[in-house]
Image 1 (cartoon, protein in one colour):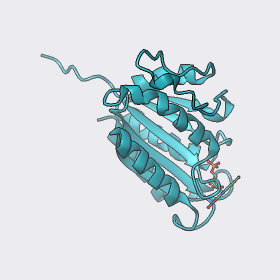
Image 2: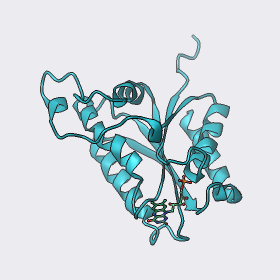
Image 3: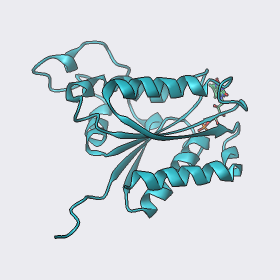
Image 4: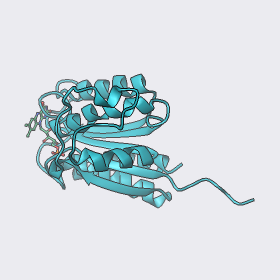
Length: 191
Ligand SMILES: Cc1cc2nc3c(=O)[nH]c(=O)nc-3n(C[C@H](O)[C@H](O)[C@H](O)COP(=O)(O)O)c2cc1C
């Protein structure tokens, strides 16, 4: 019998307004590693998508729910989130936490809670950059803690985190050790 395992699907959610900024560069290294090991990757530039904040209508939590009631671009993101094996969350640190763009789509994942155990049987990789030199004083750890708490709550598995200091767009490219770690994390996502 042949190998019936399927190629892993990786969905990358870029949460910076800089399409080629530091967090996107880290995410790209993860993609490089994942694709080299056989995964198929799709990248979403969240900043350019029409994603509204959760309205707290609870329509997604009703027993006969058809999912999130808000008619915006999340309606195309939900099926991608569900279909992928792994989510790569890439975000800059903004005001001592994740970017608003990242928090927007994460809040909307409330609609996936109805599928808990299925929709959230995901592996998660995180890529973050910050201007400060330290992951604590930058606020990066606040975001990492939030991701840890949220994904523990829904039973998803954080496979790895790469994060580092870089202020101007592209600065992170000088941190070759971190780029290598991102590529290695990507390879893990393909298995
Ligand atoms: C609105 C705004 C808020 C920021 N807040 C922080 C912060 O709280 N802590 C920090 O270390 N860096 C902060 N930064 C710097 C970014 O995190 C840093 O430049 C990061 O590498 C940007 O990633 P990107 O190129 O992917 O957008 C902030 C930058 C902006 C524009």
